[in-house]
Figure 1 (tube, rainbow, N blue to C red):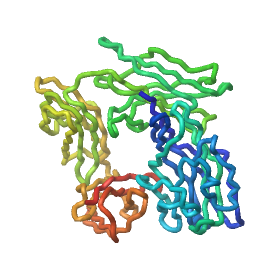
Figure 2: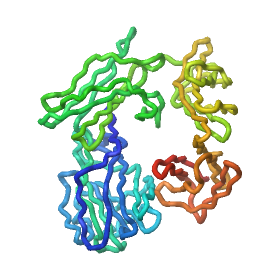
Figure 3: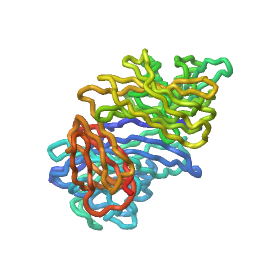
Figure 4: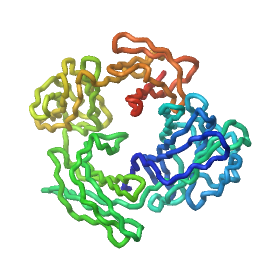
Length: 477
């Protein structure tokens, strides 16, 4: 199985701005986040998030982004908008209307033969003040010729104009930002050592750089929670189990560790290990997963266990993908993650090979931190524990939760506590902002979209502290 890569918050340095007029123009700090790669008929399908900063007070009414393989990167002078011939073998084009709330456009006005990516993308805009906004576009997917093992460093341009015409003047541009993916290369595996164990891991880190440079890597034990059936990395949820000293890496000095033991608790022997590699000489951190294909027998296959803070309660939910002779779930709570008491019991499905969802509400949570776990009991009396999750019920803790999904009568009802309702935004999946009216009763709100809109999924977002976002996907019937 292919190693999974994710590049974290890459702020690229050494990129110069080029201006084509005397007007003030800011279009800077492009950053790339790689979500995943996958093979398709010998080519590599890449899915990324892209962000950059623009100044809407000084132009940039329409902004365009292009991405190429380095071998196809053209020499565009940007004296005028590039057309199909100038762009050459472009891998992806994005078109944005930045006059008001930033939205994605389905057309590339400079040349209608170029089709920009549009469907399935999510766009967010963060106001930085003084006309500066940070634009983030998620779920950009395109195909790069060649296998993922030989995926090159991709190159991109961003440019802006004042008019959406077929031959507009270029207001400002930023050329040649890089998307680095697979150097250094991280591979490895978890050794099951069945039947007696314990688990160990193999790790190999190699580079094509002939000059030695210093790297540090950390190992995290996955928390066991799946997203779309796959483990995902998070420094908040996954457990740090090892930090290496600074180590030289080069073509002639690979990092090799074989059959290394690691610490894991009961029920954690099926979890993956994440490797996080950093270096002062690299523009990004590189993360790889050491897959765990070892098998253990559980009463149920627990795909997800999570909780959320409500107004005066805590909602717990969990999902199973397979059950074989399961009896029930005991819900347990602790104030210190050591001593647990039983809050309630939910009957299990018993036998199932399809996804089953369960929910329990703690109507009287403790003040401060609440630690929850599931005791998963089989019909023969055997049991296992889930991972432990923590929910903060402090006086200033933020609660943001949908109250019903799909939205009945096209009214989105949600709970919001300890945050301003003015920070709520609604987007469609193309990133277009949807206007709405809002009514409130205590900490419960009803959002009513304005204008005409189609049925489907929409993104309800809460901007926190002027930076981070909490999002909810809501279905409008």
